[in-house]
Picture 1 (cartoon, one colour):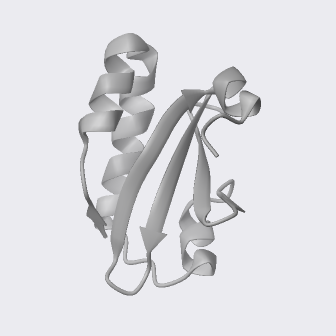
Picture 2 (cartoon, rainbow, N blue to C red):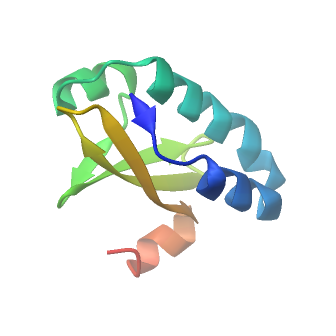
Length: 94
């Protein structure tokens, strides 16, 4: 898969340093993966959920949430938001 930018991950980790290792682990799994469907994505990321057109990943033991858009055919991933669990629950990311 092609991750459009690592910048949102780095910016979030600058504010929440403990998120850096799990975010970069997520990035490596995404970039090494070849996901052609939600089912294939879920085989690697068991806790990923589809919320409307977006995909929500639990990061760092469910401490953080990563919201992404995924185009399965061209194999492209866009990070739309990286949030603390409490910010995610507020729902402003929708």
